[in-house]
Image 1 (cartoon, helix red, strand yellow):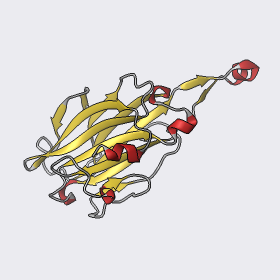
Image 2 (image 1 turned 90 degrees about the vertical axis):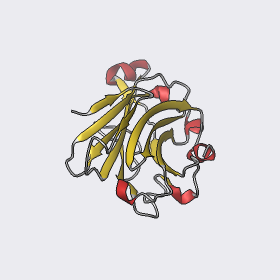
Image 3 (image 1 turned 135 degrees about the horizontal axis):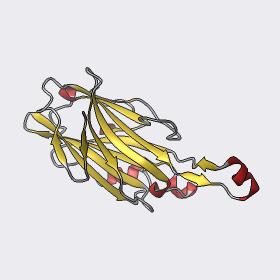
Length: 200
């Protein structure tokens, strides 16, 4: 059974799973049902808000810095130069069950100078569209062993993120020869991925 984490918790990823090398990091969310107004609204019921969230990973060095833009993996740069990280593509709506966006990580291929993989989700074009994370629910991140297809851990982001336009979700970081997972869950008002990258 997968380990269920709370905000701030850290857990060994590779130590308890010998031979773990290739993982899938799945991130998911659902739009909150918006009640439509007027006669048509009462006829057709609730509808989903059309919110476009983007999951990204920042490959950070030992100083928690982004060495170059190529170490930022997102819908516009789907594969790391070293080939250790692959983003499977952009989901524009968040509709449907399960993962909305998936990032594949080959832990053994991550270059030695990269000490941390930092996962974030931001809302695309949030200012123009007037969207924030209070309009989403059931957000989570989970780690799956790609060889066994077994879910190893899951972190449900249960906090109220109203007014927040980005969430620092979690990190996978080196601990000696092993990798650990940390649940972060911090909401921010960053309005774009470039704003987030400036923090690093």
